[in-house]
Image (cartoon, rainbow over all chains, first blue to last red; front, side):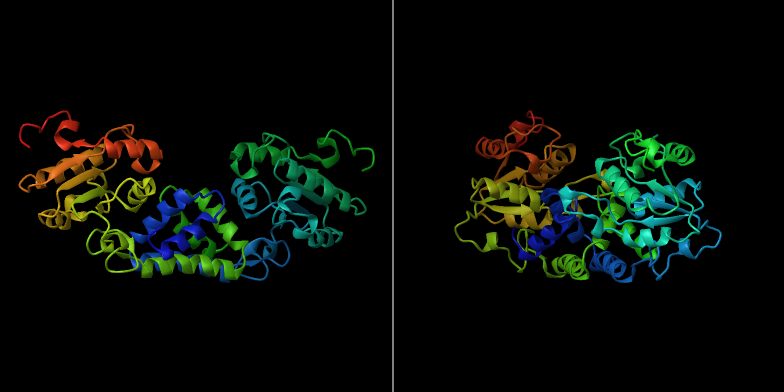
Length: 209
Length: 209
């Protein structure tokens, strides 16, 4: 590379998930072709986001306050909590307009391969929330992947001494797909047809719950 | 979007070529998951690049000085100039180790569809360089696309009153492909088998040159 500065920028861009070095170089050259003002706006938007965005103290949703707008909204049912992996899945469910409860954003799913264990996710705060008798139902809205299933299985175990109905989105979503790529109708149907968690997994743990 | 700050960062990231809004949101959330230091390094690397990288006054190659390291290198033949679209194509040729001349980086190719005309490219400075009798050969190392061909055609016309041999890379590269994705052997062969420009285009302009 003819410049250490280009090299460093390409390294940084190639550090983004799914971006290779060729793409990173293409993007770096694109940015070099823009005006200084443009590039400053680009860099500042990212830094401002990192500095200004907070996770909601209650549910983990992102926003600019200590408590997010959904948790502050009295019209949202306190009795139902949908458990999602991240903001993108929350946004996908919000876009359907068919869920009036609250959320709990785990910040990931259990994935031993990637070194993500239960302690890395917002699971303790979830258990604490669900322990409040006002909560009647917990809905797993997790990806239909091995990691999503493992996470649901783990959380369900943790919830077994708490009196709460545990449901999961109907598997209208093809197994192996990411939740956020499901079309809206599929997502609406899987919200409406949600099933008790134990039944949905073929009853392996059914007699116990 | 739950935060204007996320929205703004996603807008900026989605402004990069080939990045859609879904990908932009995924990248924004990834950056939110990093430490503040990490994100600062990311943003600073891009701003530092934009502020510190200069185009070579002679050939348009990128670097951190007014004149690039290739133009300053006495061992590079002054008599041969390879004309490339951008830095990536220059790097692809350098990687072969089979070219000992100099470069001229146009900064693009003529593309009326994208509003890029000859005046937007480093063509005047190329003509001035080639007018120096020390230059014996100009090699078109442009993409084998309609735009690349148009650019070569235009430059060849501009060069017709100057006594210089105009050649073009052998078309070992499949038509429609981008130069930088060619494998190294193909690129070496097309350097070695370069042809007089008029011959290579089927002699449409052959009698004149």
